[in-house]
Image (cartoon, rainbow, N blue to C red; front, top):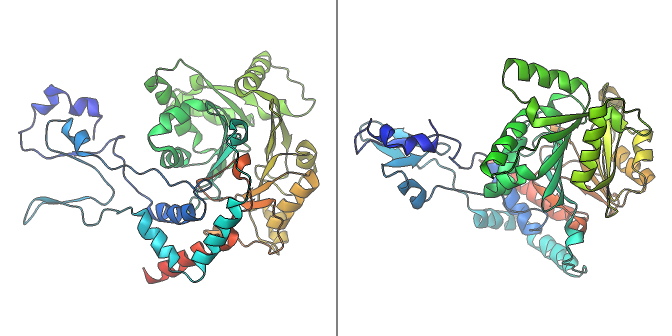
Length: 435
């Protein structure tokens, strides 16, 4: 349980015999821990490879193990070592990731293949474009569930890639770094360096408890990539600073990694009375090529915000955070290119939505219609819909359902092939019943 630099040191090797078996457990051990997520993503990938890319998979190679010049085994999930009667590694319980097998599994479902073929045919008639400008913004959903992580949906986090070298993270629930690793694999350090800013909508735990790890991992990535010290711009309710200060003073120094912009300073006609905040806001606009970054208070808890990002190229992305239907959000988001709106509860649960200060699916869609949004992506679903949320049959074609590791851009922002998705998740339910 030590870094590779220690394992490769001759002084360390002298402590052990030539035949000593070394089990490596450190940050470089890369194995699958959530096979169920990989299986689902493989099946979704068959429906639409661009919207649902395969998750990155890595197993240690013989070349990597040979670097240590001693007998080593990289730790993997469910790997066992038997001490008696015979000393040996037992790998029979290791996860076997086989995307082709999962696709065959889905193809056994009634009507699934026909539905996917129909989907592919409808997509093939859409005009193709290779222009870079249509590839951005690219929105990657890292967490689309509410409250607590589940095996299908992680908690709130959405990455907006503005260009090949610029990104903004909208909320940062626990497990966000792990989701980034699964999505980007060996490109993770590059992607961390690309993150210029993080917007935290409010201080409920499912929206910010992944922040500390992202800050630390981003700093590590900057050092690893030989990048200069580049503090991250954090747009968040002021009260979050109190928590960060407590952690900095009592646990680990982190405040040098961030420049804080209080979310209320980005409201329309706000009085920005702190000189540093003015400088940071200007830096945010410059780094991300924004023409405007605006916030508004939304109808959730105290100090809860939504945000609107307007790029110099003309696109506009609006993020609701957690909220009931909110007139201020509608006004701020007029004519948005994309609205990402929470839809925690299903239709018919309006009273519970009021009690919990959330939105139903139809309420979220209505906000987008009033806003005249070009496209609406619904997320932050209650974990009672661990697989596919209940959705109105007469939903507009400009409305989509977000899933973890789904990525959309102007080239492929469309209503997902919902009939195919429902069949995939129906298959998951059937498979779970016989497992």
